[in-house]
Length: 142
Image (cartoon, rainbow, N blue to C red; front, top):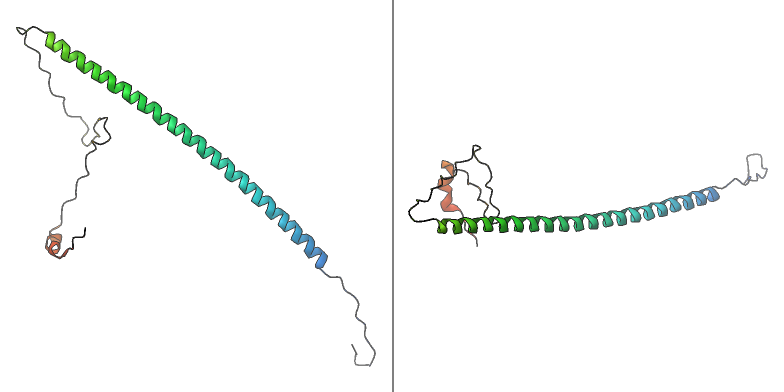
């Protein structure tokens, strides 16, 4: 380059940032690789934990099912024993009538049934008077 006086100006070689950037680049990729490896380990440990919990849940459900079957078998045996004892009573003696069970003190309490299929249906809310006129316009789709 030429300056205003006509002398040739030489440029001093400056330090380039290429080695520093290269080192930072390698360090960042190393940290990223460590992060990926640690995430993989965490995912594997969580997968193992979920499997263990699932196995425990299956075992617990099996134990509950066996206990429920045992309870039902005991109830059947008691009912059969009561039926047999009623048949053995002499006809001269009048069998005692059992009073019907009294309603529970809590209204709306769940029934104590053991069947999964005997759940009551939820009650429908009452219809508004404004909805009655709109029923003729409702489309029924199957």
